[in-house]
Image (cartoon, rainbow, N blue to C red; front, side, top):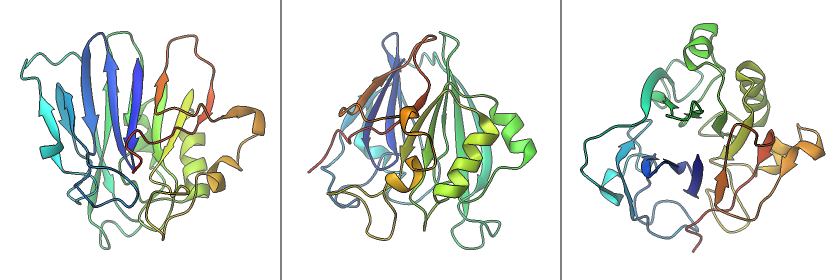
Length: 209
């Protein structure tokens, strides 16, 4: 399985020539990122905000042959039952290889036992860590402890030249893990297989301005 981080919360998940895009952002919406334009077989959005739902950026191949099993788990964009920012939807992708990739979208609260059970144990977890609009570092670490993913990929954080000013950096999240479990591959891509090492992988956005 290959994971490509285009930036912010937008990822592309590929396996055996088939791919999905999660949470594409609108042009000019995320500071420091270039305009998004990708081709994939399917697209999924966690909620209706412009930095997550710009499906026009994704050109679909039109095969109609879905090779990933997809499960949606409903939750909230905030810790007030949606009163502040509305609903959010988690997407669980089960790939033909047997790997499970989970995109949490703009999760705004810790998971209930029922939500965690519906998600299962991810091989790859794409998790927001920047706070303000989503869970912050401590809650993100708690969610990781709940789900016990093998590979953790932070998203929705502020880097040196990208991201919203009001959200925090990835370092606030990675500091909660042993240093030997944190990796910075200096790439927008990550390949994950059954024998890949576990840990936190901080990627570089593909579409840096």
